[in-house]
Image (cartoon, rainbow, N blue to C red; front, side):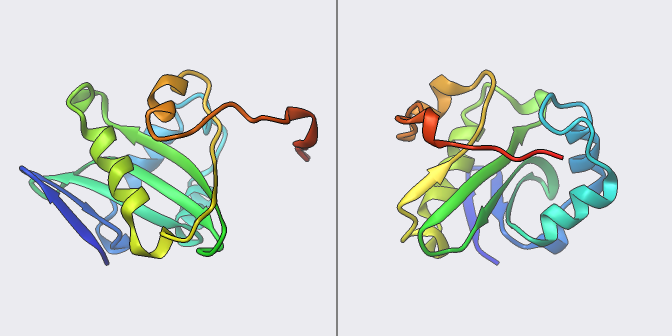
Length: 139
């Protein structure tokens, strides 16, 4: 349970603090997770390192990392509630994730985004150099 504090905002990896209903309700409206069931959201949280962003004990942001905690990590489900966007909070959340002790040895990070390339480029992400090598299996 790692906590990071900035002004009135706290980031924690304590899953017991997560507002599961809020996370599910946000994700089911997102372009990337709109078809996930509540149980899929719960299971994905159980099997990831999760970061909750809170203001006055109310969750306002979320991100999760799927990882072996050694060499590879996939950043997923990053969001800040619309009421709190454009205040630098996603930067605070991402900085906290990348400084996390459990994730320090990760040499390869991956993510997929439709519209936030400029944000992630600020954190060192680049377009995949060899897209012809990447494969995807879907049911």
